[in-house]
Image (cartoon, rainbow, N blue to C red; front, side, top):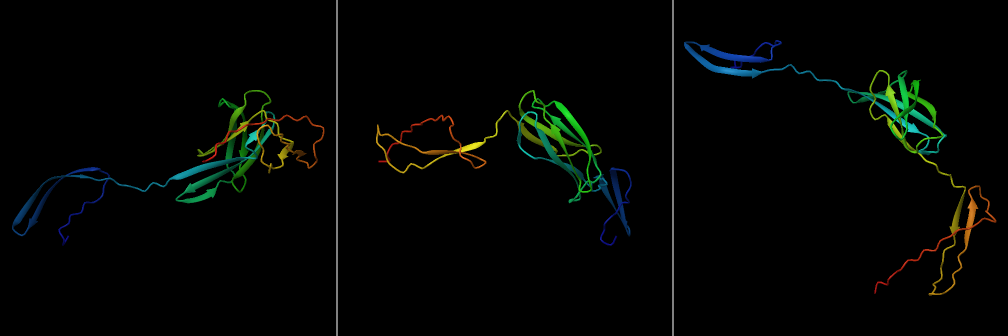
Length: 205
């Protein structure tokens, strides 16, 4: 063109070995071989599929029921939307990572699906896991963990009145406490087991 630029037409080739001869009036100029690398680049649109799982509690006892809810989301070009009518699997794994149960569900119009698992009465306790898998798409971040332990839910609580007096060595100390059920009633005629902890404190001076 008028600025001395040379343009090549696009084709499917990636490499060029270029030799240039320029003629102007009675003068001719030659340019050494030029090595040009060209590549047609297209912007790749990435699509990400995610699954989120929620359980009704974080700890269970063997034999109890785990209620869960899963949500599936599609993100494309920084825009997210739920995946309605999506076929999914929900898998239950024990503490050894072994699959012990699975459900096949279909998400509703809001992209969510819910269900329940009954935990085995026997076997090892510890950290269990449930996973959400898409039938058509791979779902990221689709695991949820919870604990299975042989624990007993407390039915009462104890409290003590604050000690406001100062005592010397060999003094007798009377401490009053209260045992009360969570239902609100006082617990009577109960066997009491207590511990006394001694802590040595040194004055700052």
